[in-house]
Image (cartoon, helix red, strand yellow):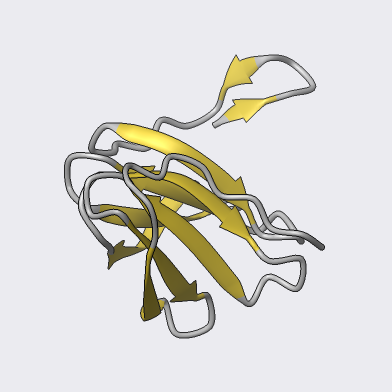
Length: 109
């Protein structure tokens, strides 16, 4: 984590080939895709610590969070799917088949 006011590193959080990151609308959590462990780390941005790891499809890369913060959508590149994570329960509630090698996700507000 970097303190933007001073451009200094304030915390280092380990991951497994992190690829994408998205923040909840209030900024309290960061969702980071872990390419080699097929998971998403949920990081408490105030405590600088991983509070959960959510298993998703293979080789997750892109992630986006809905404007209300209720869901995170994760592009799983070699699974050719998008996992939908319920941010309240920190569980995958749906897996959506998509085209080959999805790499990014965008959500219309």
